[in-house]
Image (cartoon, rainbow, N blue to C red; front, side, top):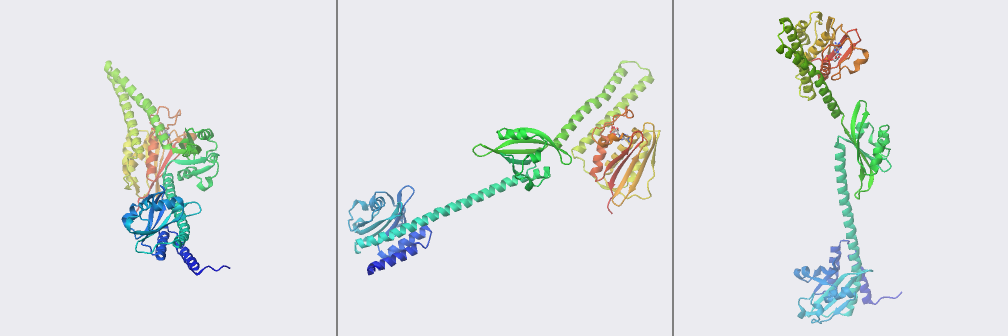
Length: 528
Ligand code: ADP
């Protein structure tokens, strides 16, 4: 084994030490500062600097010693200019021993007259020159020698590797930080999208190009009654089977947006407006299909109700009005005998009463529909209010007998008195109205711990069994021989049902054609 000379050995150990120190950090600034300190310790130069080539291809001082702040800040050397520029361009070390008048000094040396010697070595990695390491001494110090240059070059080789490593590390670190930032932004955006999706009232189902469900929202889970986890990855046809949305889905694949209306029985019938549109990526290419389902059940109901009202108004309001108009015209244009005049006026009066009733029913309905009525609930004595309305009802008919034998005690109900009077009036007038032959009308009261039940039974025309399911629908009237000629609006029972249910009670009916009817409603018992 060849033994190095003692000076070489010393240099070898120093170099080893230098390499150890400068590689102990991956922070570029620290690495550069280490290199500067070490060269300073070894060469005891008056001034020194490490310059790196920036992205514009210029040399910038990264660390220095013995140079003014101003010089550090303002030095910017173009490759090929001055000592540093020359070394960075050629990639060769340079030793200057006092040639102060050399024009290459101008870029870096601010005190040309006192400069004695300078060392400038390139910082080279395998592929490229990344900067220069430069030292200089004033006239008073001994000149640098070629040995110095050789040793500084060896240090520079180590330094270049450390700098490159630190730079790579910095680049890597920045990339990781950028990825973390990107990830955070993505998570935030994802959170926002999820918040929007989950607070949406409309159901959303997104499929890929093969029709597999990619995502849904809670509204979709609610509407279809299927857990999201069971839907993801399954075909959209699982949700829309038998509804015929395949054509729309295919149109979506071809970039077209289409609309349709569907109904789902879940368990009661709900109506939806479905918008099927393509899902595109940033380049506009179709990536899947989006189904958006808007619940239009209420809208449909209101629209239907409006059209029913319009047809009812045109029919039911027009009939009495035409008749009133006709009779009034006759009364005005002819000289009628008093008896005929009286009969005509009776008809006009009846028609007017019918009109008023119709308008009142409509107003009640409008109020109930608009949710404008507020329950003014308090303990109400049902026996008392039933007793109070019986006399007026009896006045309206001579061939009906109203029978009311209440139990000795019935607890008070928690109810809105005016609305309950309205319920009783409706049911009792119907009982009278739909028993044209007269008969008994019986009011019964029953009570349990929580409820009081009221039966109103008549011996009238009754209701055919098959008509019962629709009896409480708005504007529904039984169309039968027996009910022919009995005036009404078909709104009374709908209102009764609405009011009773708003109290937390129930309305039901037992009836058969020609067998009379019993309407029963319940109300909650008042506490205490
Ligand atoms: P209206 O009496 O104004 O037509 P309702 O909503 O009060 O409207 O009643 C709806 C329908 O139910 C009536 O048209 C009638 O055919 C039937 N109905 C209601 N009450 C009775 C009853 N006590 N007996 C027989 N049919 C009834």
